Length: 365
Image 1 (tube, rainbow, N blue to C red):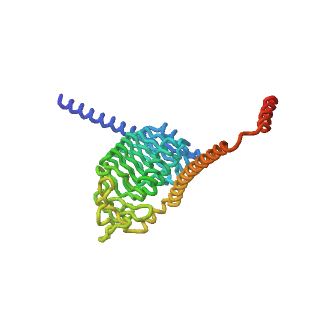
Image 2 (tube, helix red, strand yellow; image 1 turned 90 degrees about the vertical axis):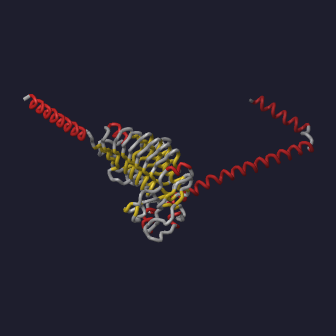
Image 3 (cartoon, helix red, strand yellow; image 1 turned 180 degrees about the horizontal axis):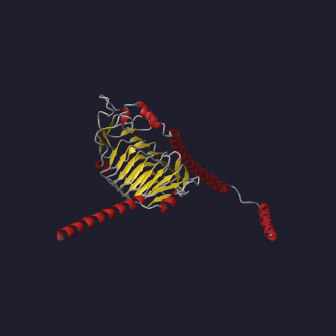
């Protein structure tokens, strides 16, 4: 009888525990809310930062189309998504250009579907975070498009990163996935790795004057994935390495050979500074490259390069003008000195008039 009572008590405890866990899980699931932001005052908030400040960990924030003039700080585990999933119609422009447009300092945050612009520093900054997901954004006009600082195990995918000084910068950041990004027409390097290792970089479209910064650290990273049957970024049949081009359209992938027509160059590509892309992509579908290029503003890139050259040229002209002026002044001074030696001083009449005029001026004052 005693054993039956103990058994019943144990069953009761297990049932009670199951009910408590079920209630807890239900409450946890119910506690995750969807918040809406709209520039047209139709949502719960008109400011993205206000929505973030009010959100709890696990909440999702949907942002309606519009241009939001703010510097965003994501300091909690939230999903921040544009409602349209179109970076061209949901834009975050930095209110303070000397700060990052978006700064993420919380683990497991998700950020997707925005146009990022207006910062002279960084478009999207991840600092000290893990397991964040940065996807489907258009970042332009910054010193660094995306900057990972002391961050690991994050996924950076399907972003368009263009018209920045550097496309992606990894600093003391390890074990991140950088995949399927369009990194093109940046003025400096497409990607830079500083004290960063074990990062997996594959299926990206690189088209910059210098695609990779020359660092020995490059050898400690992987520049291709395992050959996988899936459409790659240039619509080839396999996901593997990266597409390597340059602004002239004469990069390694553009000029490579693919004799077996599998969309992979027949020879590997050596990364500057160290490392190898064992399976660089080949443009098996030429129209796919044209489709990617249609998302890029080549004329803005070329005009900006021309403007930079023009800004440098006047400095040279000014220096030359200053040198010429200094030389002219020196010559004039020498001539005047010679004239003073050869010519007599002013006569008594001129001297008297000068002194008299000075006297009258002093008296009138």
